[in-house]
Length: 274
Ligand SMILES: C[S@@+](CC[C@H](N)C(=O)[O-])C[C@H]1O[C@@H](n2cnc3c(N)ncnc32)[C@H](O)[C@@H]1O
Image (cartoon, helix red, strand yellow):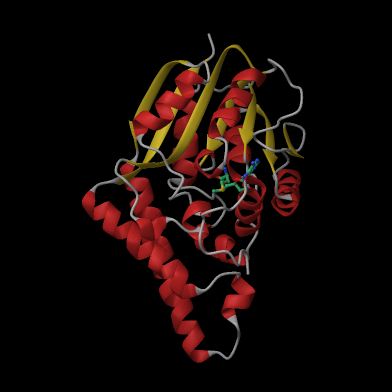
C-alpha cells in the first residue's frame, strides 16, 4: 500500500512528500497515466515548450520530473538541454534508461533532489518547468523561490497544474486526493500570487480544461477494466497496484462532479525573472 494514512490532517511535510513519491512509483500510476504523469500529456508539454521559447541553446530544469517524459519530449522537439529532478530513485532510474534508449543522454540528465531544497545552481537555467507537481509540495512558496533562484536573469518559468476555483469539498481532504494533485490545488489567482510573490513578472495564465476531463475519462475506463479483472481473477490487485480500486474510483467520481460544476480545470502559468 502506498500510504496507510487516510486523513491528511496532522501529516508532516516529509511524510506527504514520501507518500507522493511512492504513489508515482506504483504500477497503478504507470497503468493509468502512461508516460506523462499529468493532464494533457505530451500535447501540453510541447505547448509549454513553445510558450517558453525553448531551442537548442536553452538549459531547462524540470522540477519533479517523474519518469522523465516531459524532459525527453522537450529535448527531442526543441533540441534543448534538460536537467530533471525528482525524489523518486525508481522513476529517475526509468528516466535515465529512456534517455539512453532515445539517444538523448548527452542532452538530458536526471538527478535526485527536493524541489524545496535544490542545492546550489544559482542563476544557471534559462527555463524551469514544473508539471502537475507544485500543488503536491507542502511548501509551494519555497519551491517557487528555488525555481526563481536557479534561473538566469530573463529566465522563464512554466507551471502546469490542477486549478480549483472553489472551496474543495471535505471528501477530497485525504492523502490520495493530495498525491493525485487535487486537495493541494490552488485557484488561478492563488498560483499567480505565489509566482508574483516569488519574484516573477509578467505572470500569465491559460486554462486547458479539456486536459483534466480527458485524463479522468481515461482513468475511469481503465479502472472499470480493473474491476472486471478483479471479478475474474483470484489475485490481490490492491496489493499489486498499491491502492484500493474503490478508493481510486471514488476520487474519479468526485472529480467528475467538480468538472460538471466547472470548478476544476488544468492551468498553464508562465512568468519571467527580470
Ligand atoms: C504528478 S507527478 C508529475 C511528474 C512529471 N512532472 C510528469 O508530469 O510526468 C508528481 C511528481 O512529483 C515528485 N515529487 C513530489 N514531491 C517532490 C519534491 N519535494 N521534490 C521533487 N519531486 C517531488 C513525485 O516523485 C512525482 O514524480
